Length: 158
Image (cartoon, rainbow, N blue to C red; front, side):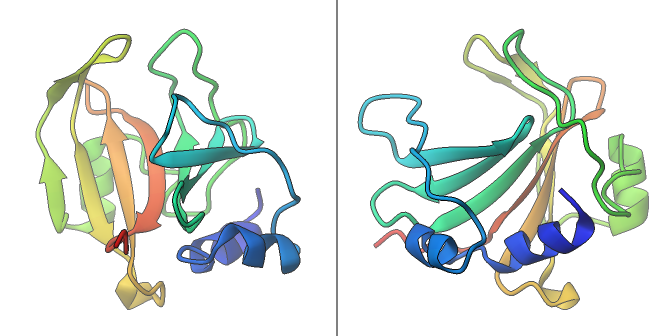
């Protein structure tokens, strides 16, 4: 995914699936459902990238890049993200580049098969022209970035 495509997808957060198909942003395809009656539906436009849609409305809510798989079945994103996201590979570098997060979560343990994780930091991208959008860096227990997620800050799930 090139920088221009990423910018377009980030700006498309909050759009619905049908709008994105009609606009030529994505091709019509079957959603991935990870469980019966899911809250989120997924598309995988390329290896290591997931698009998340609210199941009820099919509103585009997030773009997830896997930088380091946390399970044996995970697939790493082979492309590169634009700077400063690509070089932000550890928590100290993320905080040096982005400053204090507006939301942070300390290390915690996820259910199996994930296990312990190093928490996350979230940064509001509104000042960069991305309305109601954040970037979230997720960490392993050594505070290496394992995922970069662009998502809506406020999700309208009425």
